[in-house]
Length: 356
Image (tube, rainbow, N blue to C red):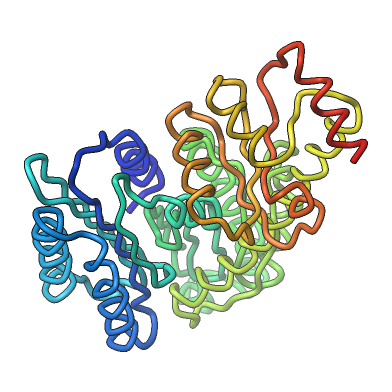
């Protein structure tokens, strides 16, 4: 699944109209212990059933049966996480999603879907470009939500067989050097086109050390600013292992960028600028359409409040940044917003928060 598809599905879920029938949100981690995880979710679903007597109970049962049937028979090889949203009744709804990255085990039943875990997945994994350069080949990959979604391959011509037949060794070495320079230039041009067309903002270089070094030195300034890190690999490495290595680097970069956004939030609050802190103030800003970015702590414990915040953010097309390990954000109740504009009473409220 590509990022743009996930964004579309999240918005569909955020805008789903409420009815009298419960929506079941079912998240399953398939990476390890899938059977045990499913048994735990079954136990939790049995507890949820007690909350829906009568007709609502029949609808819950029908929605749950559809989820279990799907998980039993439709999971694809390589799936590490699955999210299924199901509602029975007069206005039926069913949306199954599979991912190549894990999801937490979670089940909820409410009048609206539980979308936070999809928001967290989108924010954590997002997308980036990997350029892999070895002596034998080059690959430029787009990685989105932990999976390769676009690939561009260029095989290098074999030169060694010409040594001793029509070229001297010195001729071969000179040609090889020039071919390598040309190889690097060509791949950077392709890289530029791909990143420009896709609107990518993050780049990782991988491959043999000397080629990665040459590519890095040849990067134009605008691509160098998008470079996250470099990873040493060989032509024998499996592509899935290479992607897994780059993924950990990307996740760490995303974590640092999220923490940097908390610093921006704090600076705005200190200056009485375009920011509010706290769940209540954030809800108000989102309701009024003021919020530009919702900054949300991963450790926020009130799941119901968290869902309300992310649903409002999606409905108002507000960016959401999930932050891990930010004590100062937790001091504000785990939520804050950078604003598009301020209302007259907003400055007073901001100052009151800082005076506490």
